[in-house]
Length: 354
Ligand SMILES: [Zn+2]
Image 1 (cartoon, rainbow, N blue to C red):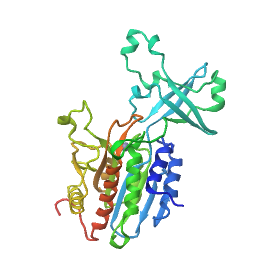
Image 2 (cartoon, helix red, strand yellow):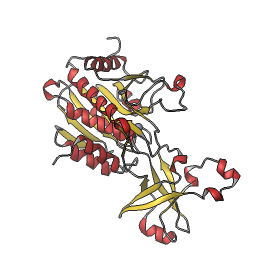
Image 3 (cartoon, helix red, strand yellow):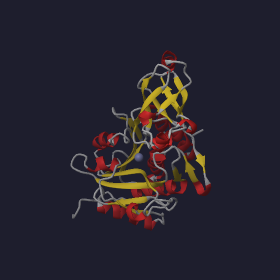
Image 4 (cartoon, rainbow, N blue to C red):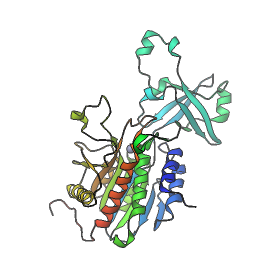
């Protein structure tokens, strides 16, 4: 039996996908979308491009990155302790005391990130924030030789890939950045009513976002879209200690944040807002005063330029093992993008000032 959309999201969370090690999750995506896609392909970089109505001349691209921040084995010492480097931007404080799985050629190897017990830390050590390279993974090996029977330099690692359901339809899981966004782009594609569709839509499960927004660059070049919308997470600013005067007001559960600023096409932003209003889809506005650290940055400057948008899912505790997103926000985001695609007439032109 085909998976439900919710089961698909759990599959995404439970499949390891550190940047550069995305083959497994791309297999999950390809398997799920085949029931509703008109075309599915993989490019040489590893992006999975899922299309509906691909022959239409006006092309809309969605991008949700499938990679997650992870770890890479760098060195094993004589005692068999494994030193790792970050793949992407961790807050190392959140890794202490966490379980790790190293994905070796022969399967998963379990370990923990240990630290000297509080009783043994000196006054100075207690004050210092550790770097990833100060930490080690303990896989239980007796020595280097035994460790290297199980893992090798260059293997990737992840923290536990489980999802907790919280109150108010909220989910806590690692790497909802950007598996929530990846889910949204595929779910939007699935929800589009074919009878209302005048344009081609390509939903991309993009690779290597966390190490430089790289999959968006190659996939956008290949698709050559008129419109490109990145779907990623953004910081929910509704937790203690966040200053809204600096970070703006983005609330968990109040709908997707539509980004506005120089990284976006103003006409596209207006179109998304109109669609949300017309369909009573909740949304929030996010001021983006810089070029964003999302796939939208590279999509916009592809070839001779792409009308670009950014739809963001509010996220608490980004890049920690306990990120929180709202299932309601994910649903609203998928609706927004599906209804947007259905609203586009074939003669639309987002060229500024024209
Ligand atoms: Zn992201």
